[in-house]
Length: 214
Image (cartoon, rainbow, N blue to C red; front, side):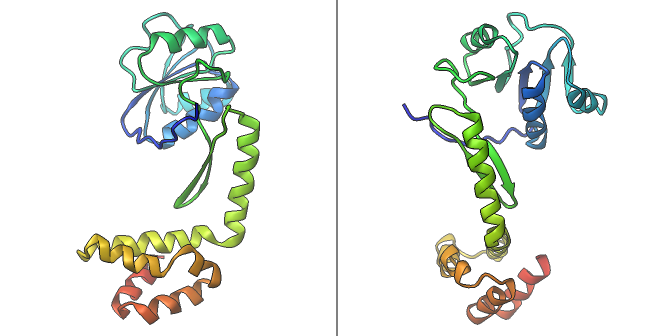
């Protein structure tokens, strides 16, 4: 079975993290950045998480997990150092649970994410292999940076926003963006070259607005 990849909008969604150690320290900052309302159940916190808690970034329930803690959450991360506890949490919760230890009973495997704004590179593997996906994700992120894809992606995103603001039909927006594809960007790796290309095919005012937002 191959897992179905998905991006979640966790804005104002309640997320439970059981465990406050190294694994939780890696995953909680991304949850907070995604807008999740995080509750951590753990007898102790790592120094990194303790600093976040003191900055009032999440709620801390200072004890071990007990049955029932998993109720009323959109997502759960079972990150204790006891695989049997993580599996029990997963069995009790009707939704998706990510466990610290990959196993057949782990319904949600979180990918390694490399942010190259506005592009997110998310890498997973089947079966889940955290070390492998981190190495591949870091490699792809660096290659994107070297080839200037994030800069092009920002231009693409802003151009799409401007056309939407002007009320262009979506099929026309797609036709415009297809003229400035990723392949076209590879042939024009310098931003000044791309801007000249935009100016050749688009209205001058529109291109000026794009440049103003870059």
